[in-house]
Amino acid sequence: MNKTIDTQLKQSILVELRPTIIPFLPRLALSFLWMVIPFFFIFLFLSFGWFGGVIFLLIWFPGAFFGLKTWLFWKRLSYSLLDHSIIFFPENKSILFQDIYHVSFSLKGWLAYLFCYGTVHVFVKGDPKPRNLLFLRHPSRIQSLLKDICE
Image (cartoon, rainbow, N blue to C red; front, side):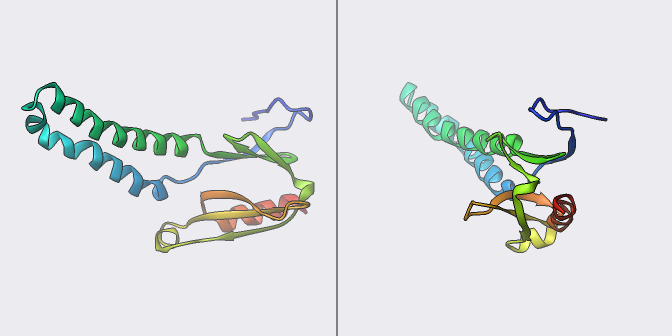
């Protein structure tokens, strides 16, 4: 399957990288509990009439918002390795492979070691901070792939 992205160079997609959901699961579980627990007190809230209903909604909506925001952040986060560059979504910023001078990776925390996900750090010429590819499965493979492509 040969996908192309409409850029000046008409590059084709080599690899589409998606982050794993595992680091987002604690936040999603917290927001799920935040949304479910008020339902145990629904009759207590509704015994106060419309005022109790408003209190119930004021407790429930932040949990729903927090969960939706976390899920959308995970869903929209992706990286595309093209013929000559890397594109970071949803920012739509790109890095040319010729500008990359070093690639490394890190695993932080026991969950990262257990489920083998981490961050790939891409160092670009002229930028003191590395660009990070977050929460990717098997970051050592991605690091070696990037090193092979850049050489």
